[in-house]
Amino acid sequence: MYQDMLVHLDDSHSCPDRLTAAVTLARALGARLTGLYIIPPPDLLPNAAAYVTPETIVAERLAVKDRAEQQQELFRQAVAAVQLNSEWRCVAGEPSHQVNYHARFHDLVVIGQTDHQDPHSLGSSFVNHVVLGSGRPVLVIPYIGPRPTLGQRILVAWSGSREAVRAVYDALPLLALAPRVTLLTIASKSGTEAETSGVELCNYLVRRGIAANAVQLPADDVEVGDLLLNRAADEDFDLIVMGAYGHARLRELILGGSTRHLLECMTVPVLLSH
Image (cartoon, rainbow, N blue to C red; front, top):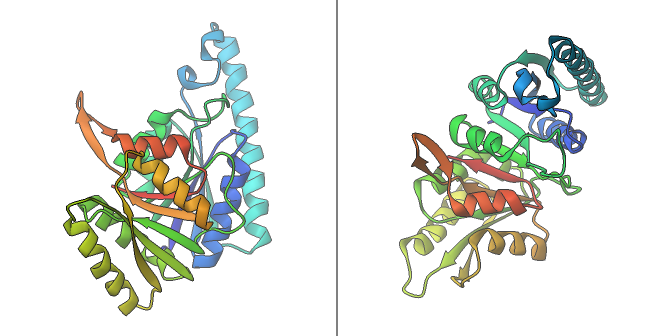
């Protein structure tokens, strides 16, 4: 059960939609919602190269403080409108480190997709570090905003891997509330254990009162992320659940190609677990 949710808030254009999605979900789950705003170090501020004097750095810090207070007021209004149990936190530091630290004390983390056209949107490395480093399920909201519903029609990407198993069990509170759950396995020509285990998992969920069905798609040359997004669009799914795959490179975990591609092109909220 998600009893404590954390939503990362910033100055990006998509932040209001992210807040709305988090509040809506917290209300549906009966969860407590913490809003987290992070004041980054001077070198990570937008247009940091322009700040060449202590005075301009101080001025930008004051501007960031004003923006933090604006976000706090928006958060206060949003949670008050639905009488949600909540907390506001404003901290200074490197964004991904701070989110990962505060995530340790919450059941679910809500962040935004990177929007490369928005100077206030954090880069892909932020999403990478939170998904692979927080140790918690991470719900990523697309910068185009969520659909009118969230978690009513869930598409689960199933491969039978450790990451996929973790994602399913992390998503159980959402799956339990969803009227429709589909487990999607990309089928190979020779057949795999994943295809059989998809049916087994479907039966497991049904025994727990979760209406689920298992579906297979042929393995084409299409990117897995595109297959998931196309399926979500064709059948109006409003949430994708999948395992986050990563590999070590230069002493750091890097998202795998399929996960990275999905996060770049996503048009539907995605719940990721690693």
